Image (tube, rainbow, N blue to C red; front, side, top):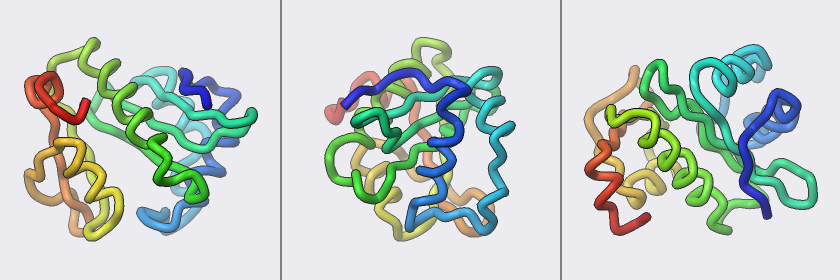
Length: 148
């Protein structure tokens, strides 16, 4: 298993993973374009992928422009192996070396993702739109988290 920085060449496999999830699904698979992915990993922030046998099985993308976690997704066949935590920690480690601004994310209610972020030390601060919980993480919370 390898965690590495995402490149433009990874976008096709990133999209396959994004559209394979069973929770936090996109209402339209074309909602997130290859161009969106490219912008987020090259201009707005950075992304990471987890590769197993040259196949991308998960990815994470942080957006410095909006201080947001834009994506953290795993192929469902690779859940519960610690990959999500590795991607999460790699992404936040990088994020907080770039800025000390708090970071936020939104995720659907009553999902494994909601439980994951609570366990990882994120603080619920309200809602994002009508269908998502909004979580935040401060640098201090990250730096002192026992879950790191």
